[in-house]
Length: 518
Image (tube, rainbow, N blue to C red):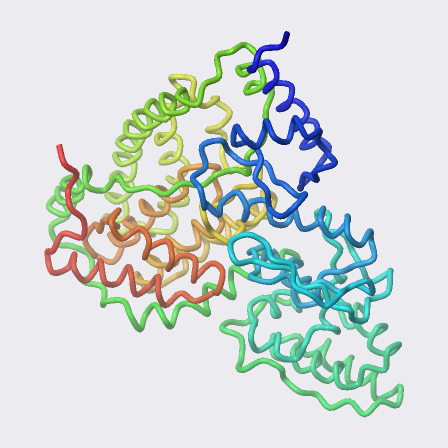
């Protein structure tokens, strides 16, 4: 007779097979009732709605949104496929966001389908799906991205509402910048007789500096007998001049975000004190902050059942209590790694105080910070040596955040541009706020991004002569909420204001965080 552990191992094996087949959502019919109930009772399945489940971590806290946000797009693709086959399409506005690398989880996802009931399907954590009976694009204008059926980029630009451009200027401009020439949109505009839309797109292209595309659209429409009047749909000019051709929408988004966010930062941040006269004294105060500075945030990968876990369950060595023991060891190694990384950062700060370009210094040294941070975990076998190789090679998710960091391939495009922006930025306050924010927005590593971003923030504070500043654990909720506003809603004001408040206190000699109890 099979033991309870052998039975659980069999259920986990069934779940693993489904995940390996690419299932982003688990239907009740995908698993036997016995497997479903066993997995759910042990914390490996979470019910999203009647008959639909997602894999989860056994030690996730009740009400934690992370598993749902990490599963949202995969679950949605599977659910829509089950309901509508291939006769559906994400709205043109959401399609544009996905085309430009914005994979933040929306509060409500709008889907077009001829089979719609025009109703809202409620999902966990105040998210929902609205299926709308609306005109579908031609089959040739539909693309598949990670299982999601979306408008092609040209057709999405044509079908998007006029308000989208003014309300989502970063996404809209990043999408426009990908268009190679007027022919990408002209055929559709002429075929559909879209005179008004043509005028809007011509104005939009002219807004981002693509005057040739704008002129060709207007001339071609008028030559075909359409009365096209050019109209700029944006509320104002772009924050910087876009490159004529930028193949990566991620890079365009980063440039737009950086330049758009500068003004609010400069309005709220205290003026730079300038380089310190007493460099040894500054470094001594940095060292004094070490113990108090150990604050970090966590990021997780969507939970997957692996063979190691199955074998631990099968052999009877798996126990939820072991997770707590493992956590204690991880915490000890993290503490040692933090110390080693702190010493490496201190060397970088010394270079910056020696008048080296701060962007160049962190570009040179951030890999060393990361390796020092996780070297102790490699030494005791918690991580593999390959984990220190460099930027992540998988998708990563941020605990409880609706922001989904860029896909792994985009990280390689974004990080060099990020350091270029730091290198070229003249205002220390902007380097401080955007150095921290953009790093966690990109999330270049599988773990440790929060700690790395705070190290980077303090290196940038040193570049302006600001004191080393500790983000307190007690303020974590406000800190994370401000980062969420910047990441999901592109509003940097709360985050800039939060950091500015801490820096102002530091400038007055007030501690921003209590030292830990001994």
